[in-house]
Image (cartoon, rainbow, N blue to C red; front, top):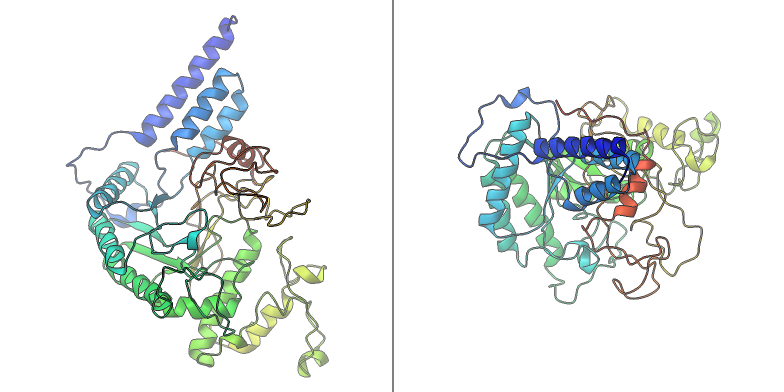
Length: 449
C-alpha cells in the first residue's frame, strides 16, 4: 500500500476494531463476584464475536473495503444471544458463570439459548443433543448453577415444540420426525418431561426470564402450538419465543404471537381444551365479512401468505387479518390474553425468501439469499404482550450445508451461493455481508456505553 493516507486510515480502523474487540472480549477476573442491582440493567449483552467475523473484517480492511468492514463491525457490536449447545456439566457451569460475569461488567442482561435436548433438529443440519433424559437434566442443573441468581433471558430449546419425535399433532396425525433409535412409545412424552424439568430448575432463579418455543407464523397453526405450549408449561414461565433462526416479517409474527396468546386464554378460560376452535393463519385469512355474513357464519377467507406484511387494512385478501382478529374479539369478549412473547429479528428485515428457481427441496429456511438484518434488539417493543425484539440466531453464522435437495450435504454446491455452504454454526462471510448491507432499518452506529 503506497498511499500514506490509506495506510494511516487502515491503521486507525484496525485500532478501532481492536478497541471494540477488547470491549466485547475483555478479561474477566476469575474470582470476582460483581455487585449490582438486577433491576438496574436495561441493556442487552454484547457477547464475544465469532472469530470468523474478526477475520472477515481484517480481510475487508486489507482490501480497502472500509464501508463493508464498518458494517460487519456494527453487526457484531449489536447485542445478540449466547448459545449453549453441549459440553460436560463442569464446562457448561463454568461457561454460564463466565457469561454472566461478562454481562455484569457491561451492566447488561445476557440472552442465553439452551440447545441440547435429545433428538434436537431430528437429524437435520443441527442434529445432536444430550443422549438421555438424565444427561439432559444434569446439563440443565449445570447451567442453573452457573447462573446463580444473575439476571438472564433464557431461550429454552429452539424447535423443541415445533419438532417433537414420534409426536401425534392436534389433527391426530403422526408427524415426520420418527428417529429409529428413539423409543416411539415414550420419546414424545420425554420431551415434555425434560422441558418441565428445565423450567422448574431455571425458574428457581427469580431473575431468570424463560421463554418456550412458539415456532412462527409460517409453521404450526395457532391451535397446535398453543396446545404444545400449555403442555410444556408456558403458564409457569415468562412466555414463548418466535422466529428463531427464521425470516418471517415482524408484523406477521406480532399478529401470530397475539393469536397464540389469545388461543391459550380461550382454550383454558372460556372453552377448555378447544384448540381446534382457535382461528388460525391457515383457514381464516379473508377480509372482514359483512355484518349479515357474520351473523350467518359466512366467513369468506383464504390462508394467509407469509410473502407480505399482514394487517387488518390490507387490500390483498391473503394479507388481511381483520377476520381473524374479529373472531378472537368475539370469542374472548371481556377476557384478555396474558401470555407474553419475544421475537427473533436477527435476519428478518427483508422477510422470507421466495425462490425463483424450482428445486427438489428449496430449503427456504437454510441460508436464503437476499435477506437482511431486522429490527435492532430492544426490551421496549411498545406492543402489548411483546416483551422484546432479540437477535437470537447469530447473524453471519451458517444454517448448514444447504444443497436445495440436489445432492448430499457438504458435498454439493449451493446453487444460490455458488459454493459449498459452511456447516451449521460456522461463519458464512458472503451471507454475513449481505445481511449487513440489506439491513432494515439500515445499520447505525452501535451504542456500547
